[in-house]
Amino acid sequence: MQNKVWKRPTGPSRKVWQGDMVSTFIDYNLITRDMRLSLQRTSEQTLVKREADYYKANIGNVTTIDEFMDDYRLFNYAMKAHGLEDMAYAKAFMRKVLESDLSDEESYANMLTDERYRKFAEAFNFSSDTSVVQSDAQEDAVIGLYNQSYVNQDAAVKTDSAYFNAAIDLVTNTDQIWQNDRLKTYVMTAFGLDPKYTSYAQFKGVITSDVDDPTSFVNVQDAAYKQGLQDKIANVQANATPEDLANPNSAASS
Image (cartoon, rainbow, N blue to C red; front, side, top):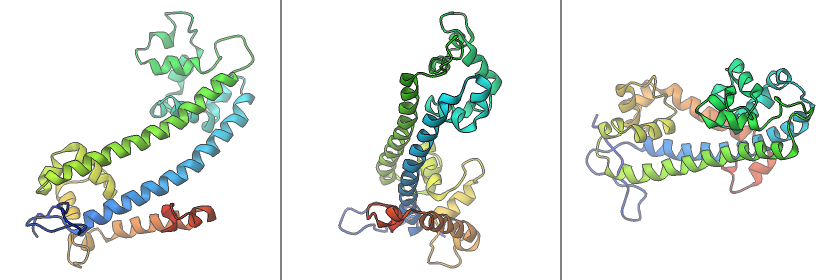
């Protein structure tokens, strides 16, 4: 099979085929990626509100660090708000951060080079004598940071999409995608491939497959992936709210 790469059309047609190019499978996956992202944004809007409501309703009941950390949703909400979700497992470490006296320059949080930990400690009053763990202003700040984290994620996706649209026009073979880490990561995300476990042979086989050819790599060796992707999309649509399905701008109504 030829090593084919898709070239963007210059005329009215959606795409043209010039020499060595990828099959329609890459275009299909990039379209479904956009659909998944749209569905994800819809679900995230619901998730953000639900988690914010839970945080508002329960943070006022917390009086100790143990209570705070033992409530998975509260603790992880605050950690994500401060960009520390990857450290949610390190509770002993985070306990020291929360216990820090920020008025003491040599306290644990102040000695850390990453200022996110100091800001996390600032968001609560565990080190003080007050019975109020978090003031209204502190609570609003955490919720605002959490919401902003999703805005930042969406902006990052748009930036990566713009990069892909510009870079793919210069691609003439699979190797050029494979050797460009940023482009490769974007394409792998579109295909649902894990960069850690995807070999070059599998990558090339997938993106050069012709879905109309029953003997192509993706149809012969990766049929389960295709079915899994279709099942995930169908599942999201099946669980969409009536409002989502009625909204013509929602991918769930597609």
